[in-house]
View 1: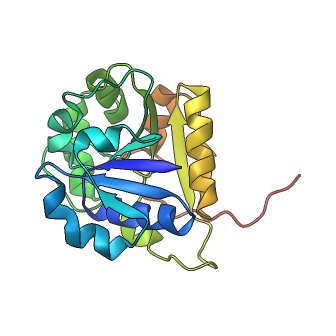
View 2: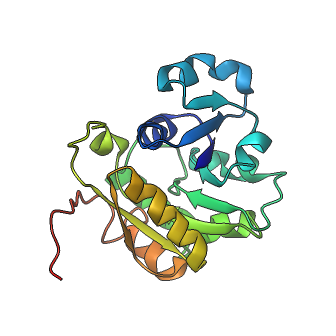
Length: 208
């Protein structure tokens, strides 16, 4: 699968490495142009390439991985109709590096009872939106070895087919996707400040 990233920070660096190791390819974009990403994609290896935002948006799956304050501009100008968009953002009034109590306080004030992915869906009209990868600091999943922990990645979304493809993508890396249901309910559970946010779960075994 080919995955486009809008944003080139810690989230993109971490998740794209998992995807590349699993045999997928990635196209990384930022607001400054692909010529500024030479070192970034070289560090990721031959499975990565730099592109424009529009080129990233043409991939099989697109991941939004910017700071919250950059989300409106990042989504602007893209025809999202039918595209699968993974929202890996968290809502903050000010950009913060990872999940924090201060960030939670600011987020709840800013959202006024809404979920962050609900707001992203309003800005990316027509996207088949799936919320994932936003419930934990990236430092928790920076083990890229074959025997890495099977860390749980929560997923929510309203489009069943889009969510199935995202779950398959996540599971292909050795991480484990857990479906929390529709966007409105699931997002509230694993959004910053939710009961499943900031918890380090690992899938070990299940009863059948």
